[in-house]
Amino acid sequence: MPQIGRCLIRPSNVTAPALVIQPAFSRFVSVNTIKGTRWHSVNELEDATVDTFRDEGFKPSLPCVLPRRSFARLPAVGKWFQRSLGVSEEVAMNLGYLDRFGHAMVPLEFTRLPSLEASGPIEHGFMRSKAPLSLFLEWTQHAEPGTLDRLYLAQASFADLPQGLVDDLPAPELVTKVGKGDIYDTNLWIGISPTYTPLHRDPNPNLFVQLAGSKTVRVMEPEVGQEVFAHVQRFLVKSGSAAFRGEEMMQGDERSLLEEQIWDDIPESTGSFIGYEAQIGSGDGLFIPQGWWHSIKGTGEGITASVRDLATSSLSERFVDLTFQVNWWFR
Image 1: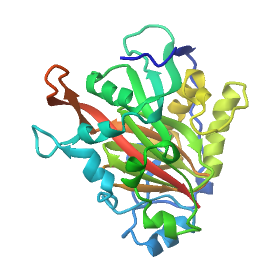
Image 2: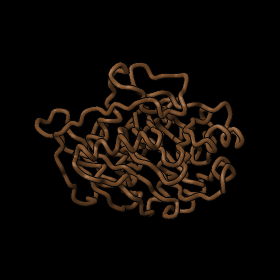
Image 3: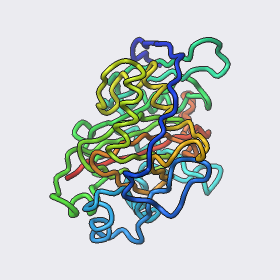
Image 4: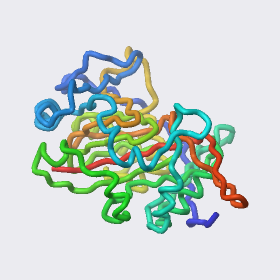
């Protein structure tokens, strides 16, 4: 398999104290609380009409989950995936279709996860590069479950993708009709769990749609997220940027500390409410308002990868937790 470049390794062996947030700023509290944590469930809309979405999510600038499987009929769902050869309930990547676009250059992130058995400081490796989609598809066929070396097709802009793939993901009416109809950017994400996007905020409203697999999203109001981010920056004695997927967020101490603050749950008795959580599965959609901070993890329950026998060109399958997601930034 081709090498995509050198991996930068930085040690991380510090732990910041958990930040305790006062709940007075909260404007939106769900009736459902995730037991034993500081995270409440994101509100789920009763229907996916433009009016309901505008009134309960877009205009008040509040996160919301669309009714489950509201986006299950996107053309990509029917073309990019197929029923597993062995188990009818499971879904596999349709490699025969996606191979047609293998020439497309896509952004890949290489991450080396820390070994749980390693002694000494925790280490992450991280590097970005552009490579043909065919390289990524080939990797999914050979990556072993539980591998520490990961490729993540992250934030592939529709402007750089073949028109055939773009046509498979038409913008939903919620994006084109609820506001000005101005789509700032559309991005595709494909990876093997666990995938991870660190705490950040977007300059535009974001409709996040899971095509296959599942992810957990944690979101915080602008003032709260800023306080958490600043807390980590102060601990590191630095003044960093909240730029989306900045390299400093993806490796070293900043990655580890941001992940601890958001994902290391503490008992509710020792920390007050901090934000909201949504579990997003295949065909589900989540609205994240402009300026709201969020972090995302691919949590498993993905789809199978097709494995091609190079000698016979036959296909077999094995489960490797692939997740696919698209998001629209719009105004």
